[in-house]
Amino acid sequence: MNSYKTKYMLGKKFLHSSLVVVAMMLLVSCDKEPIGPTGPDPVGPAAPGTYTTLAAFRAMYTGGGADMTVPAGTKKIRGVVISNSANEAAGNYRIEDESGSGVILYSAVGSPIYSLGTVLEIDAAGVGILAPYNGDLELRGVPVAKVNIVAGTIAIAPRTATVAQVVANKDTWASSLVKISGITSITTGTTNGTGTNYTVTDATGSIALFVRTASGITVNTSGTSITGYVSIFNGTAQIGIRSAADIQ
Image 1: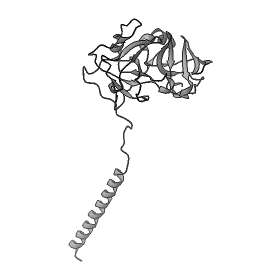
Image 2: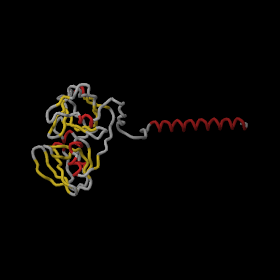
Image 3: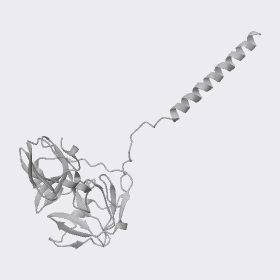
Image 4: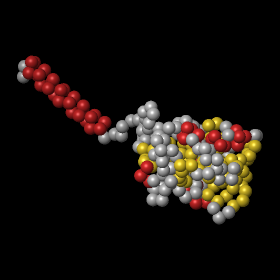
């Protein structure tokens, strides 16, 4: 075999081997999971004027303790569920938006269970009722068809606060997330047919924590920080948690 033909054959074999290797690499690469974040994508910023913030929505309430129908023409609200339905009264959901304000949604009969982290778009105009609930603010009377689940997530960063600050700002911070560090004690109080009361104390004061038996949450009484949402019961500030992991 002459040298030219030998070189040609060797080159052909090399090209064939290279193509086989590339093909195998592509097959292996295609068989792998994509690299990157997992889970739902964040909800994008709303177009200007699409929604009213929950801060503005709360400020509309002028009922003085009575029911108030949400005015016709009010823009929709959008927020994320920050509560565990098993640790709330049936039908109650705490929702918060990027403004740092929240409200209780009391869902209509026939509504699905909205899990922690679900983003809801609510059209309460002309149908929703704003009213006090144990000293907190509640939205009820919105038909199921006017509460829509929005695909994606909204990240809410809890406020860092002391117990005294939570108590002082309960009316503004109700149904929004807070984190209290520097806890000196968590003590077990009374238990009733619904759940157990605890007292959470830091250097500035004490606040109640109520955990429903149905939630299955075990409270770590040795914890030194707690993340949860502000609630109000009979005018007194409380804190609610979503899972045992909220106490560290």
